[in-house]
Length: 291
View (cartoon, helix red, strand yellow):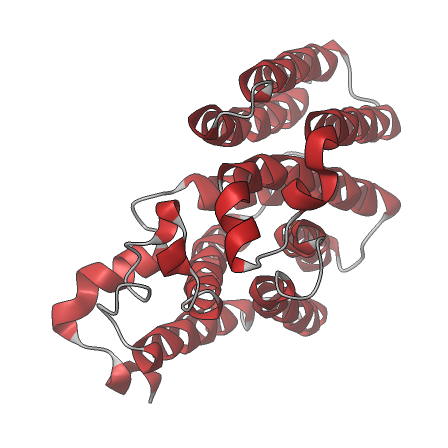
């Protein structure tokens, strides 16, 4: 029924709502999911589960972008970076956006049905977090923590789908990804901070104020510390440790980028986190495949 509200002529606008032209969000969600799949399966995840989670990442990230634009439809027009989004500029209707969101969620749920019943139950928690985040920006200065939980929920789901349990190492990965997400999404929020103050949108960038760079630094220190603990628990060797050195170097580079809080530089720092996630993934896969 949802697809009946969609119009073929607006397909390009739907792609914009889904951010298909901006894959950074999908990548930032994909790498931690792959960390979990590779750890849970000791480097050899099943092809079918890997495909299901990869497609699920794309669909849920797309759905999250659509519901985010729906939640911000009355304020995006006042923010420089988002003024030309399809909903803000009324190129698509609210009903179309909600129909697209429902279609994406339904498709993602159909994929989850190929997994075990425990993972199916957990998927409802992932959906709740994805729907909750965009609206939390009206009520709390900590929406990035909700986003962090949403972006991390695929980690315990990957373990449950693979080994029907969620061990402590999975929750350490969950915590690491959560604090990392808060750090990089705070950089993202720094881009819009002045506009958000005017329209009443709340964020950690506003909450942290002039301490933003220091708190981001502390969050990233915690992120690396948690990954170090994961490595010790899993008896990883020098390949992993060297990779974390490179990841840490990138986080220092991001600190240099944001030190003057320039919008473009903050956005560049945010984008750079893709390479951090990729390096950690390469470290984990190399640990298993070269062992």
